[in-house]
Image (cartoon, rainbow, N blue to C red):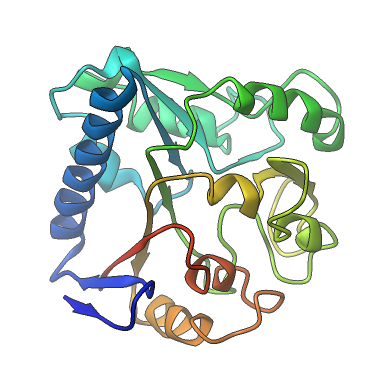
Length: 237
């Protein structure tokens, strides 16, 4: 493990993905337990996609008061929650099983036509969750996007504005399928701990570049360069 100057991300390089999954799952449980002791409830933000699945496999085995934990999503594809591309569907299938089956999930999707129409409903749901979030787990694309905050997106300026009045933003990425709804930087930073999980040499290279990059080019840089919330970066080949 290496730690640079104060408020810099703490980096941990793991030997393989199984080791990363065990460590990250344990760290999330520790954060949730602290939240439960503090207020009696805890909240967790998770991504969809392939990155978290092995972590979810470890996390769902952990014995704890899951019925007092609320899980929500860092972002959502604007598809039905039964669609195979739905992040909510993936989280329900991969995380909310076994010991974690009693956790509550608050999705971002609603029964309106467009993500723009869903922003107000999403904000209302997020406002009812225990905040700050006890832990926020995120991945990162090779283009530097995190959640659904994509470089070059028309929604990026709002998404990265920490003073914006919204916890979520609608987006229509040009290089990814489906319209999206994403938590904004404001919402992601309303947390006690951010865990950024990366796999592969290319993502490690992008991460290193992002530590000094313009967030408009590599949006994940906005998380790495702030000094409000601690960020733990976990990498495996």
